[in-house]
Amino acid sequence: MIELAKATVEQSKVENLTETGESILLQVLLDMVKGDGYVSVKVITDKIFAQFDEQPRWLSTYWVGKTLRRLGFKDKRRVGTGYQYRLNLDDVKDIAGRMGVKPQAEKKGDPQKTLDPDPEKAVMVSVKDWCLAHRDERGEVNLVDLEFFIEETLKIDSSTVVRRALDLGIVQRSNEHGKVVVL
Image (cartoon, rainbow, N blue to C red; front, side, top):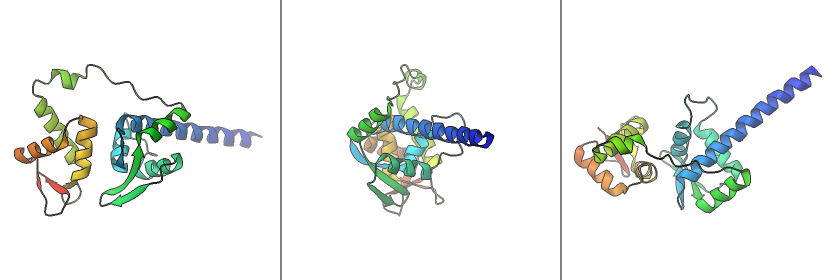
């Protein structure tokens, strides 16, 4: 009888962790997805990591991909930097609504945006930090992922920012198509 109780408690812990993880994933998707398009599993995973003070051991790109499939997102493609899933805002809202997940409230008065006298500098620092965190062994980042980060996280036109980053020497064109080298 005691063994059964212990097994039930362990099963409840696993279910709570899974439900919590799925809720956080759906909250991130509600904030990220603006229309219909492909989104990198790595970018989703990074956004989920940002929700935690410490990195949970269970959270990985594998877990995110498996959970997306379990939630019903089957359309995916393999690209050089990993997998991308096709996500549609209506589908994300539908699944989140059925699971009782609401989008996170927008943070008002973000100190970094209101106190920084030079908004371009703040943008370029964010771009540089992202590039350093996501570069591969050759020091390159995927241009599509960089543009996605700029559009979805920084909420500004990616073509202008990428051109400015090239001008400032933060990145330079790579010999490999679709990549830039982080300097």
